[in-house]
Structures are given as C-alpha cells and as structure tokens.
Figure 1 (cartoon, rainbow, N blue to C red):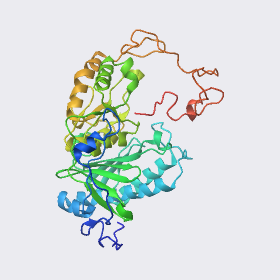
Figure 2: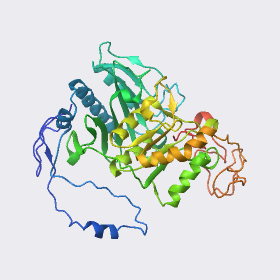
Figure 3: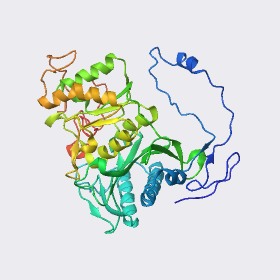
Figure 4: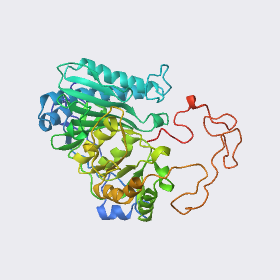
Length: 435
C-alpha cells in the first residue's frame, strides 16, 4: 500500500503505514499570543470567525499504528486500509483530470455523470472485485447490490464522488463509505448496523474521517510531502452547542415549511455564522474540524422533496457524527437516521445533523410544519413566512427568450436569455442538484 521509508532533513525515517510515529520538520515559529489577546484581536466586530483549535505536535501516529490500536477486528482493519488506499488514488486522479461530462452516461438515476465520477466509481468497483473480504458492493451511481465474493465478510456502500454539482467550480468534494457486516447486509439493515463508516474530503489537502472502536479519527494524506496517512485528530468531538449553521433546501423556508423559516430567523437573530457551500461532505466535515455545526435538509413535499440517499450518504455520515457526540434526525419523526430501515438502495431521506442542541431545536421548530404537511409551492403565490409574508414574490427570471432587467449579463449556459434544454442542464436554473 505504498509503504516506504522516508529520510529527509529534519525528519525521522519511518514507514508511514506501519512504522513508528512521524516527526514533522523543525521550523521557526512565530510567537504565540495569549488566548485572551488573540480573541480581542479577532477580525470583525462580532468575532464570528471560527479558527482551528488544532495545535502542532512533535510527532504523529501513522494509519497503521492507529488501526492496530483502535480497531480490534483484524479483517475490518484490512478493509479500512484498502479503502484508504482507494481514497489516495482518487486524490491523485482529481489533481490530474479535467472536469468534463463523461462520454458514456450510465447513471440509472438520471444524474449527469462527469468523467471524474466514472473514474472514482470504477476504482471502487475494482477494489471490491479484488478484496476477498468484501461480500457485496453498491454504488450511488447504480440501484443494485452486487455480490463480489460469496464468502466475504463485509458489504460496502459508497458515493464515489459526492459533490458533482460543485466539482467544476474546483470546490471541495468527497467520497462517502458505509461498511456493514455480511450477517446483516445493506438492505433490511439500519445505519446502526454499520461496522464502520468513513468520509474522504478532497480539498487543498485530503483528509479522511473514520469511526474506530473508541470514536472518530481524522487522517491526512501526504503530510510534509510524504506518502501515506498520518493521524491529524484523535477522538474528534462535536459540541452540543453551535454557532455555525448550514441550511440546505432553503427554498422551503419561505413557503412550504414556515417552521423552517422560524428556525432560520432564530439563527440570524442570534447572529450565528453561515457556513454552507452546497457540498454535503465539506458542509458536514466542518463539524469535525470546528467541533460544532448543524446541517439541515427538511422535506418540502412534491415541490422540494428529500433528495439525499439513506444508504449512500446519510447513514454513513450519521454514524460518524453520532460517534463524535453529535445527533441526527430523520426530519420527519425526529428519531435518529441510524434507526431508519434501509428498504431500498435508492431510498431517500431528509436529515438534520450536527450539534445535539441545534438538532433538538430543529425538531422543535420544523417538525410541526412537516407533520402538518408542506404547503405546495406555485409560481406567483405569496410567501407564508418572513418579512414579505402575504406579498406576491418578485418575478422570476424569464425563460422564454426575454431578458430580465435585473440581469446585467446572460445567465451561464444560456443563449439569448433562453434556458438550455433540460437534457443539457446540470442542476437546472433552480439549482435542483444541490441537496
């Protein structure tokens, strides 16, 4: 698995997967400010910027060392190591490949596939075919569970490259993996039956968050230019309180779900900080690095339905967040996403996930609107919540060849103000692909 010894000035020579702890190069460091002084010197009058609390250590344990100590099942250790290798390979591909539409479209879900989607998915299937411990595999790109090895011990479910709608912006994307035991399989099981889950975040650096026997750990690829993974955070925790919010399906807050509008108003009135990019992986992974946060995606009925997939996205993330002390809600009953039975491989769900107090607040304010039934949205109807409640909405951008005076330039992907054909739209004018 790419194990090799390193010998560079200022470093210890080690094997990064199975060798001893890795020592970072020595370097001059700026003097540290007292915490109180640093707080007073924070940018902005409201002090709402959130900085990392990670402190540099003299040495870091390797992936092999941590797995040996924190994952008692040797077969699960082997599968996790293989999955880390796959995430490393996807990292290399993302650094080299252009983001273009794949020549052959094979997603039966109707999603437009990009070349990097196909590459990442092919890699995951190759891993499943060559790893004898994997009994079954299932990809977010295809609606079936395939048998790989009849006597395998684990069933793996993955979203190979979550964030296709933003990867062309060169924003952070990720891979989501859930691992179930062969005794339960995926279909008919729940998220709580998972043996482990991991999420890779491909940004300026590649990090992986994984559930081990005693909690959630973060690993970083290629620290100091070295090959392999180092443990960059141990026993990650998410605080019950948060000052960060990430509101998905936000269109429902002014019409379908008045309770969601109340929740958004609360966060704004209390001067919470908005941190949201529309990519599920970075939007939730910030909870691990910041130690707080909440992501919400309520069901808005037929006009704004739940889109996230239970097996491929929500169950693996819920295992990670709850293992770190956070909470999840199915956004319908208020119960944990981990207790929702997986009855179909393409089963969709809503979710609220993150700091426990904020998930409880979501349940209290939003679920009454969900249970009452979302108010169907129709163009031209007055909004049901907010400053403009009862008033007719502003006119929507024309799509019949006329240009609106509010646009100073043609919307991207248009010709003479006309929206492109549906077959050529990725996400559409209404940004329908963003979760």
